[in-house]
Length: 123
Image (cartoon, rainbow, N blue to C red):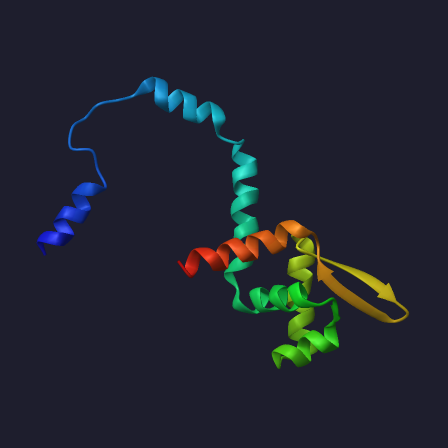
């Protein structure tokens, strides 16, 4: 019980003092509110395990929907739905070869995000 109280105290200042210059400097460096909303939406895409699995599959190899579905033991419909979300957020791209679409990661930033995320949780 005492530890919980100590933790709670660590979340608030014990003395009321304001650092106006510090606050103003930080606020001047903050991205616009709209950009922060877009960033939050971007990270929400990573909150789905199926989408993360698809991204990791595509990290290894460009693939068609059929092969992604087989790899993850899911239906093509479920994979297509998630690919649509990933494509809307510019995380994946595709190329058409005849009647088949091959999906891949949109760019190296996605590789970096996945790698850094995994490194962070494995620390």
